[in-house]
Length: 149
Ligand SMILES: [Zn+2]
Ligand SMILES: [Zn+2]
Image (tube, rainbow, N blue to C red; front, top):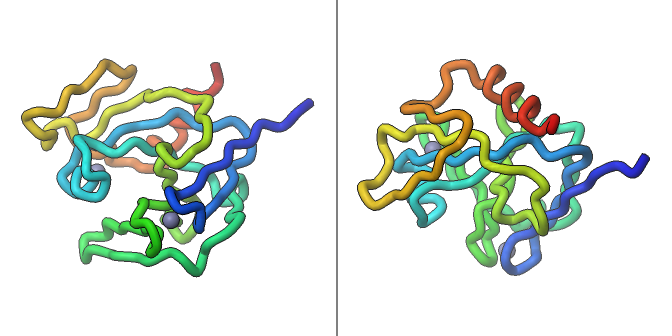
């Protein structure tokens, strides 16, 4: 059996990474932080387990910004792309899916719809939430379960 792999990189190629196994479902967050961080109406991301993730290059090219509330943004200090960042004691990595070379997955949830921009057009997904899910572990399980097509 051939194991599925996904690779990704920032615009300049300094930061590169790989995800092993089937990619979980993806989600878009429409909150103001994600909006500014992405420069768009929402970001598009997924969350993977640490053991399924490998850095291939560029750890020393990553800068970090952390808001006291806990929101964090890691980005390539050469080209400015958002890049994966670890959270929950490095149990998981948040993955900006626009960096993936090809994503065999789909958007399964929109979150923070209550704070979306007036001009933001949102297409239907199986899960539409006005806020962030309260239980992030359950949300991650949902993303993984959504990839069992
Ligand atoms: Zn870069
Ligand atoms: Zn957000």
